[in-house]
Length: 174
Image: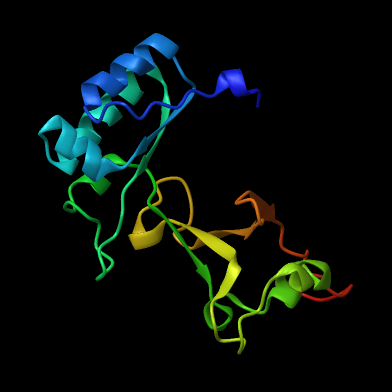
């Protein structure tokens, strides 16, 4: 994507000012980060802001990504009303071998060598992250346990990893 196709604005946290910028630029996709800051800047709760953004997206056919943060007890910061207005809730979390599997088996030895292992296999691997689709049981368009794996480069760039194809022996019923 060419740089002139990306617009970054951080000078307002009022949802109506942000949507006015969307009217001006007419983006295909807009990211709203973070829901709590926009709520505070708009004098509205998270649910009301999510509803305004959703109504705008339905009217203009714009895609939006609304970023919200979790509290320490893994609840959505600022209340639970906003998830009613979104299609999917995704979580971005560290790769944990005991939960996600062996990276060598999932991605192959070349990728596994690039990962910085931090001690025991049960430790979190800092360069490998997982985007879990449908976290908290919400995915209007697919399974709630979909996962995408990303390797974080030294410059912060995220590289999508593809799982190794599963080899099924000829004649097997799997």
